[in-house]
Each structure stands twice: as C-alpha cells, then as structure tokens.
Image (cartoon, rainbow, N blue to C red):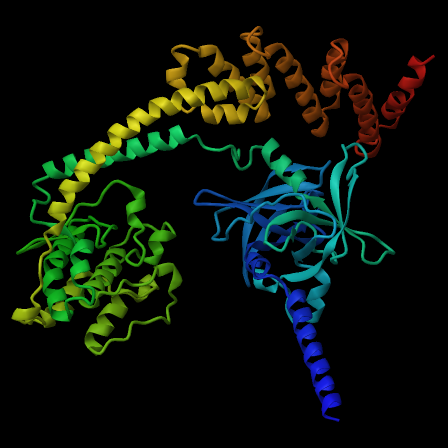
Amino acid sequence: MKRAARSIMFAICNLMILSFLSFADGSVPKLVIKDMESVVRVLAEYTDGYTTGSGFVIKSDEEETLIATNYHVVDEKPYSISVWVGENETVKASIASYSSQKDMCVLKLAHPISKKALLLGETPKQGDAVYVVGFPGAADYLSDREAHISADATITDGIISAIREGTVAGYGSPIKILQINAAINAGNSGGPVLNSDGEVVGISTYDVDDAQGIFGAIDVSELKGFIEDQALLGSNNAATIPIGLIIIVIAVIAGGILTTMIVMKNRKKTMNKNYQCLSEFMTAHPNGVGINDAVAMMLPVAVHMQKMHNNGRIHMQISPNTIFVGENNIILNEASPRESDRYTSGFAAPEVYRGVQDDVRSDIYSFCAVLYYIAFGKQPINALSRSESDTIELDDASFSELINSGMAVNIDNRIASMEEVINRIALYNGKTNTTDDTRIKFDDSSKKKAKNVKRAIVVVAIVALGVTIISYMGCYFAAKAKAKAGSFLTADKLLFAKPITELYDEELVEYVNAGVLMETRKYDEAKSAFEMNPEYLNSEEMILEVDYRNAIQCADANEFDKAIEIMGSLEKSSYKDAAEKKLEFKYRKGVYLLLEKQKYMDADSIFKEPLIKSG
C-alpha cells in the first residue's frame, strides 16, 4: 500500500510540473507585452462612414513620429486620417509614402508622440512562434467602449506555418508572404507580427474566407526595403564603424575638453578658482545640509532670479550644473545657448519638455527642486514621471508645502513669482543646522584631479593622433577593396577622412560616392557620377546596374513605360535578364491598365503584342 501511495503521489507531482511548464510555455513573452505600447489604432474617415485598422511606430524622435500600416487601411481617399493616442485623444496623420503594389503605407503624425519605435527584425523561419497585436473591430462587441489605447490591443499567437510569395496587386511584383495560424481579423490590418524577442517580423494583412487557421502577413523584409526605397528613416547601414573613426572622435572629444578647460580657466569674471559646481559640492554632503543652511545658500540665487524676472529675463536652465558654490558665496551661472541644457532630469519643469513658451514659473519649479536637493541630498524624479497627485512628504509641514507648491506639475497650481518664494523661505533665513563638527565644507580635491586630467588628455590626444594615421591607411586599402567588390556602403564607412583621401585618390572617393547614391536609390545622380569616370574600376558595369535597378523601381512605382524603355536598352547590351524583365513589365502594365485604369483597349493591345511579334 505504501509503495502504491508513493507511486500515486509521484505521478501527481509530475502532472503538476508538466502543467506548470505548459502554462509557462504558453504565456506571452514580456517583450511582446511591452511592445503593445507602440501599437496604435488608425482611424480613416469618409463622407459616408469610417474604417479602422492598426499600425505601429517605426520612428519617434523630437522631430517626427512615423507609423507603419497597410495601404488598404487608408485608401479610397479619406477626408481625415488620425491615430488614437489616448482614450479620448487622437492625432491627425498624413500619408508620408505608400505602395499599392505592396499594400504598405507610412503615416506621419501632425506632431511627435512619446512612443518608442519597434525594432524591425529578420525574416522568421517556418515553425517560429509569432504574436499578432492589433485592434480587431469584433473585439469591441465584448466591451462597453471601443478599444482606443495601446493597452486595449488584442494579442493572438501562433507559428509561421509557411513562407510564400504572391502579388498583392495583379500588376505588382511578387512579395514575401508569411502564412501564420495566429488569428487576423478585420481591424488587425497594419498591426505588427512580433517574434518572441519583441521584434517585428511582419505586418498583419490577410485573412482567408472559408478557411480556418490560415492568415497572411507581409514579411518584414518587404517593409524594410520599402522604408529604404523611400528614405523614410535615413541611412541604416549596419557596416562596422572603423576603429580609426572612433579614435578620431576620441581625439576630437579630448581636444574639446582641453579647449573647454582653457576657456573655463580664463573666465575669471564668471567664476574664480575657489568655486565648484553644486553637483560636486553635494558629493561631500550626500544627506544634504538641512533646510536652514539650504535656504541660506539659495537665498542669493533667489534674489538674483527675482531681478532677472523683473527685467523680463528667464533662465530656464537652473540645476546643480549651473549653480556654483564658493567659500563665502554662491552664484548662478548664465544660461548657455545649448537647447539640451534645459532638460536636466529632476530639475526641469514638465512644460519645458513639451516646448511650452518660457514662463517664470518654470524657473520657480527648478529653484524649488534644487532647494530640496541641497536640503536633503535627494534628486527629485523626472517631471515627466510625476503626476499632480505626487507630493513630497517632509517633517517640516511649511517647507513641504513650499516645495510641493513650487514644484506643482500643473503650472497653474504653482507659485507665481520669486517674490513669493523669497517671502516664504525668509522664515528659515538666519538659522543654521550645522555645528562646529558638521560645518559645510568646501571640497577642493577637484583642483588636484584637474591637473591629472589635463595631463591624461594631452597623452590621449597624442596617442590618438598616431593611431589614427595608422588606422587611416588600413581603412583606405580596405575601402578600395570593398569598392571594387561592389560593397559601397561599407567602403563609404571605411573612408572616414574623405578630404584627405581626395588629395591623392580623388577617383576612389567619387567612385564610392556614386555607389552610395546607387545603394540609396538615387539612380539618376548615381549614373551621372559613374559616367564622370567610366574607366575607373567597374564603372562601366555599374552604369548598367544602375539602369537595371532603376527600371525595377520604376515598375514598382507603376512607371511601366520608363521601366520598359530602360530594360529595352539593357537588352541590347545583353545585361542580366533584361529581355525577360522587359516582357514581365509589359504584362504588368497590361494588368495595371485593365484593373486600375479600366483602359480595356490599351490593355488588350499589350496582351496581343507578343503574339503579333511571334508571327
């Protein structure tokens, strides 16, 4: 009986372990969940209704945000296109570029949004796990409201069942299609298909009527090619950066630091040798100096700021990096012309990040943040991470109220003037937190360190110069070999000092520049550049290659007449498969005229043309 009981318990434990493993394996990877934040719902409005689809961020910076989606999500000329960025908030969008042949579209938002761009991966393999993220319309029936925000997106999972090729439009060239069994429904179109690492491997595009478990996505390689063709993200060459270039950067930085040190040494009117940056000063006071001493230190800064504001000037860069502490004084340095110096984390007001017009209350936020930092040695959290309900709780209620009202997230709830700040901190002036044993100390150890840094920078600069010369010559010969082999982007990376190379091998620089123009799809410029020196290396062959690639791009852009003309010229030179490509382009032109333009007679004449020629 005991042996049987042990066997039963052992079996039960095994079942529990297997169940746990099964559950773990079936869970959605955290990276996929995290990527949901970059998936958006697209709204296209027409005079007779609206349609919705999905999209995902492929670029997001201070200048613009770009969203990838399917072209069929926004075709038929809607009068308005927008993207949901909040429960009740949309941002207008316009079509930056599209391809009806590949059913791809990139939208540009009216203003940038704070969503990260998803990483574009590589073509998956058959059997790989995939996750479809998007906004299927049918899911809205399961809720009292429509799904608008990224957190409401739907995830379905499956595998890559097969990898196929097919044409989206009858007149288009074949593109790579991923057959998956992860469900794609109406409204999913344009959303990302992700792998387990959270990388985009496809765009949700198709479902198949009267079929189960068969859905289609456009492979990520097609999206990457489209983005590169349209130069939407700029150059994204993955070639290795030469070590020489890195060393030059180091040398420039070292020279910049050395120059800055010399300039700073001569700025005696702004700060003499007895001053040190507040951020350095605080390293000797990690727990702060207390409220009273902090007020005593910052009161001169407050008075200076009041005078600035009264004269119509705003600083906008108040932080531990712009305040300098002396043995008997503290000063606020002048604001620099660099825009980036406004965004010191923890000390810049939230409206500064949003580009709101300069306001004295932004200075008040920064002043109170610095005052809190000096008093307690704690750097405030970044303003963009705070909400209006976030408050700083301190034992001193009056000081706590001062800091919280001075650092209110909503600018309208903030202290309105430095005069009010001065009146409120005056209550603490004249008191002290320190004793003879805990007096505020000025750390002058930076003087000794500065001398050592200067010596080190000089040595680094000399060594960098020598190594740069050696690296340059190695990169030059490698670049020439890569250029001869047709690897122009890599050769361009290796030629990191083109002005020097032009002094003794101008032809190589021109040849590589022409190749880069070809690789970046600027075919007319590339052809002219190669024709400038047709006898150098493989220029004659590259002229033909430029025409060949140009013809393919023209056909993909529905410019069939130009594509046929170019391939006809290449056919005379027997270049590659120009003859076959010429016939293919004629057929595609016929289909395009038939399906898209409804020019039936023109299409009919094209389809009959090969028969007439064959007799």
